[in-house]
Length: 96
Image (tube, rainbow, N blue to C red; front, side):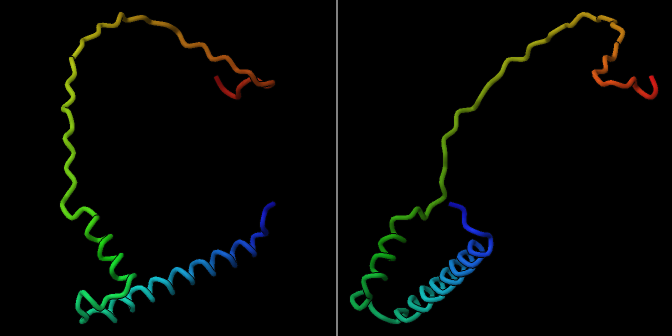
């Protein structure tokens, strides 16, 4: 079942508005606990703090193996061949 374009547009506008409101609410919520101690934070702030400690804070370094390659020389024989065009249309080409 496909939704009409105006219904999809309305849903996407509402979802964008909800996203903006939630991001605004999250930033306001973090400012309300700015001067509080560690014991007075709400559960949301406590879980956000735990999540921030889990995330990596140092740069990611990957140990990649250095690839090596061998240089090979190929000598191809020189062949002179005349090109012949084959057209698969009804009419012949305008100019050859």
